[in-house]
Length: 263
Ligand code: ADP
Image 1 (cartoon, rainbow, N blue to C red):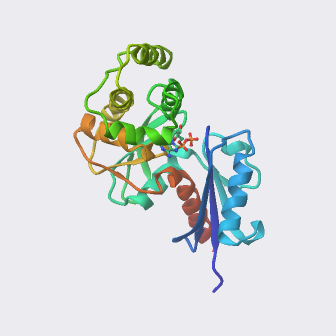
Image 2 (cartoon, rainbow, N blue to C red):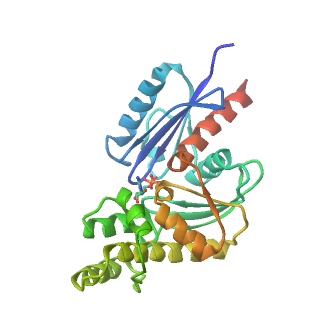
C-alpha cells in the first residue's frame, strides 16, 4: 500500500511551524521559521518541510492548519483550534502527561488532557504579555542577548534579582534600572525567568496541577523557565526536543485521523 503523508501547519503569532507525518506515525520532516502570521513565514515553513521530506504539495493526503493565524493559511483541508492540536501533539510527545503547559510567543495555556489526547479543560492568558515569549524577547533585547542564550545565563546565576512588577512595561524599566545599578546579568536573568514562572504557575494552579506535567511551545526550549516553573509548582516537567512543534504535530495527527475516518 502506498504511504500516506499528512501535514500540520501551526501558524503562530511569531513563528510558523510545519510537520509531515508518514502513515500517521513517522515524522518525516519538520520546519520552524521565526516569522508568524501575515508574513512569508507560513509559506517558507511549508516549502522547507516539503523539501525536507522530498515531497510535493500534491503528495499530501490532507493538510490541517492551526495556530493564531490558521484562518489566513490557504490550502488547508481542515482548520482546527490550537488548543485541540496542542493537546493532540503534546499527547503524542508525552503520552503520560495529564497537565500540559504551553507558552508561545503571545500567550500561555494550561491544559488537562485525557488518555486519548483529547482536551478536557484549559485556561489561557492571551490578554497580557507578561508570562509569554514576548516578555522574554523584550527582556533579552534590553540585555542585548538572544532568547536562546537566556537558559545558559540562568544556569550560571549565583543568586536572583527579583522583578517585582507584573506588567511587562514596568518590568522592562525595572530591568533597565537594575542594569544601571550594576546588577549581575545572570542573577537578573534568573529573576526574569522566576517572574515568567510565577505568572504561569498562577494560571496552572487555577486549573489544577495533575502530574505528570509536560511543557510545549517555544518557551519550553528555555531550560531556565522550565527549571523555575518546576520549582514554583514543586513538580518535574517533561520537555520533548520537539516541544515547539506540538501544535503542528497535533495538526498532522488530526489530518491523519480524519483521513482514516474517510477510508
Ligand atoms: P507562537 O506559536 O505563538 O508563534 P512559539 O510556541 O513558536 O510561539 O514560541 C515562540 C517563543 O519561543 C519566542 O517568543 C521565544 O521566547 C521562544 N523561543 C523560541 N526559540 C527559542 C530558543 N531557541 N530558546 C529559547 N526560547 C526560544
